[in-house]
Amino acid sequence: MMVNDLLNSFVQVIDSGSFSKAAEKLYISSTALMKQMNSLETQVGVQLLIRTNHGVSATPAGTSFYIDAKFMMQYSQNAIVRAKQAASKNPYVIRIGNSILNPCKELLDLWNNLSPNYPQFKMKIVPFDKDAEAWSNVPRTIGKEFDVMVGAYDRADHSDYFQAIKLGEYRFCVTVPREHLLARKERLDVTDLYGERLVMLKPNISPRIDDIRDFLLKEHPQIQLKDHLPHYNIEVFNRCEESGAVLLTLEGWKDVHPSLATIPVDWRFTMPYGILYPLKPSNSAGLFLSALREHGTTPAQDNLDVENQLERAILSVGDYL
Image (cartoon, rainbow, N blue to C red; front, side):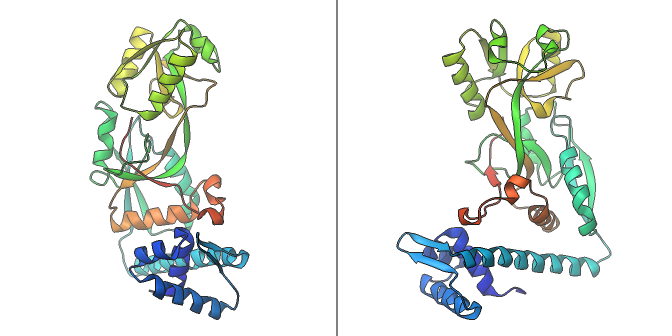
């Protein structure tokens, strides 16, 4: 390993918040790990850690050292990537899945700003025709037909199919045919939906949509809920246009159907979205994701407090809508 093992151990201690948890992840004893940290502080010449019965945290000097240690570790990894690429004639080809319900434009825009620093990666857009099927089936194809994709995801408590690097939050909106009276408004109050029939997923599929259902049933019973959808797909949007229905949807899907208008609603409900990738990405995809995590996160992610473990918004998820 190019970077001193003490740096890796120090970062793990800060991330874990305790010697015992860090030792488990490093496959060494807590005693050996504490000796390493004592040796590191001796070499640096200042106290880096605050040791208490409740765990371990960084001193101000430790926080500064943590940031630099993370940088050195990442820089070392990138140096290896560049060296391997220099020795190879073949670039790392990253296959990016793209469809109407899962457009990849935001990832491409993000990568275009970073690509000059990583010429070893080449992008290949892979159209996939899963929009006619249940949207929840899409995660099962990640890592097979393509390496990564951009999409919304619902829950962060399972990891059956894929992981995600969070990019942001989509607002829940409503979609209506362009001739509908609601389409004349740029923004809706919840009361604007009184007397309408709101089409949404049936219960126990999406926890986020279940929260919306509970809110409307308790606070706005004047809205009729038609919660029978088993999933979202292109046919759902076609039926919305044909029937004149009011459909609960996401702002990320505003361009799915040219004859439909998507309108934001003044409520607090959102759905996270991000870069989705398999539980075990390929070597090239793993290096690509590492580059994204180093330089391509959103400002909100970059400014996370070090003392809150400086965790990247990488969420293990297993359920779509």
